[in-house]
Image (cartoon, rainbow, N blue to C red; front, side, top):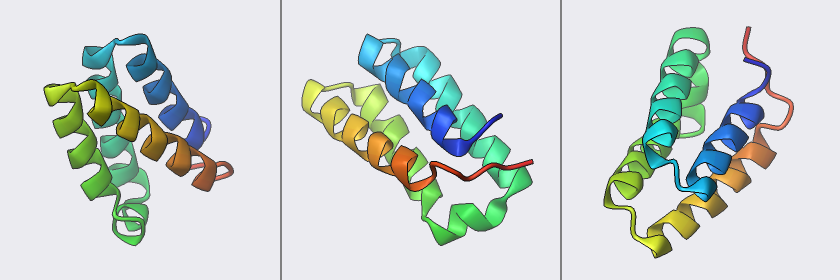
Length: 86
């Protein structure tokens, strides 16, 4: 994984294209990756809350929810632009 920002942009693109099932998989993968390699980020930035909220919105998949989700993902992608986890 290059950066958290890149992973978030992949999720963004999947949702934007309507590929919600793969977006759910990517969210789960990103969450697991961060929990294993940098759990402090989960707590510091309340990422667990974001991931849970995003999964719920994708499952319900109303257009308004998806637009809000895309805005949140883009905001976090900018915030984590240079964060690399090894």
